[in-house]
Length: 96
Image (cartoon, rainbow, N blue to C red; front, side, top):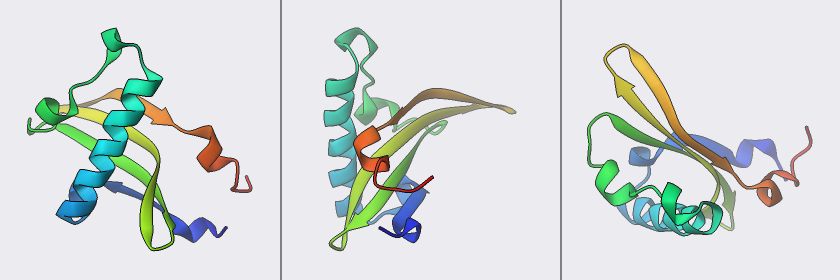
């Protein structure tokens, strides 16, 4: 596996169909990873102008596969990391 296959980008840089598919993967992963008390409502929160979602993906067979995600908020001159999640099985294949 070549490291050049990894992409780090804001979700808005993907085309709309890929955005929807990756967002549903993020929501599904969120439900599996965190207890319901810590669940993040991506649909509602991403509509806010100051909330952003950065995805780490890798290309597998011409399709983007989710490896990690980061949610951050911009407030005036401050950036707050709200949530960062990675999936170990996706990164075990890459040499460090």
